[in-house]
Image (tube, rainbow, N blue to C red; front, side, top):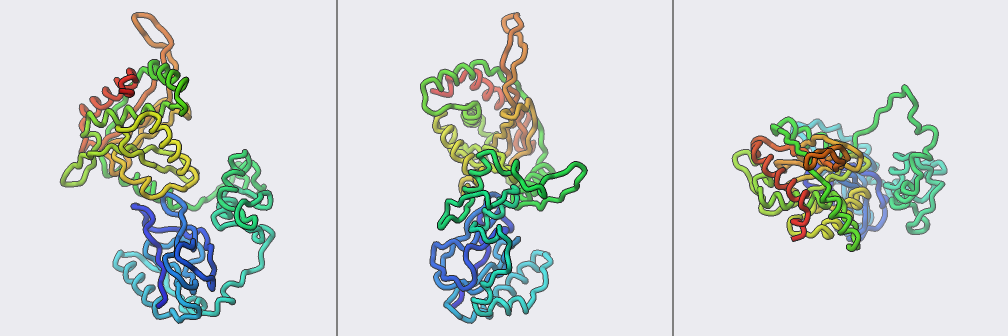
Length: 415
């Protein structure tokens, strides 16, 4: 019997996915493990894998948004009748949409009828320009379009010279990309432009909007003397193969401070407060479409070099949109560091389900008083945003004092 393929839930916060492009066309044979399409979720662009064997009989949505559990395609035996299964699935989708108070666009029987036509007629491609004749994956085409890249300038590393995502990434990292955009993509002064909202941006808007307006935020700022941290980092990097960053030290210090102040490592559950036993630090990473937060699990139990390697790996995956859902779940506390952008101080919105988030500014040289003399010191400001339903002001201050003591005496993080 024909199998109806639906949009899977590829992340814990996903409500819909966007079909970037299909790697199979109607009439193609399909085996378990084959990649059917590329799907943009609220956190990454992921591959839609087949778990069925047969032929791709029908594609419901060529490109665009599809709600979770929405009908995507039909797989079955060659020339198998599938209209009954498809109609039943579409009816179920309609009923589900109605029960959620959503308005569904009218189904067009003519379009469904077209889908059951012979595979040869459906696989015909319209006349294309030169860029369409270049072999490239759907995701690579989308990235090239977004960045204004002429595909004819690239050499593909995929099968038979096919241009894939990594070719686009490498081209941009080499200093090309937006700088070599075609004239039509240049944004002129006085020009108004509307940009479609990505799934990631929609999720950020929804989740942080809910956090900001449902959680009573309050903020505590503290300035930290980073002289000892700077000297310790120099000493560590003179001998250790991995180059420890200040962010690694911040993650470690926060994790150790959370172990001493478990109320900060908590979540609001409405009728109760959950104090988490594990310390899993979310590290905010800026990407093209917004922000991803990969998670360093059991950070309090890891050395600085282990944190360094894990954060580098996760940040790299985040920027390439290769993070898996389980790498972005389970955070109990989040750190947002804008110090590398010369930001001195800022506040951050709590990342649910956490009760707190730490905003970290840059290390600034400034005149300070030491032993009665004015000298040049290195100072870093941090601001803790907390949910006042869970965390009180005194709790936040005590946590920051411990965090400050660890960074000002970094040898304690090595014990």
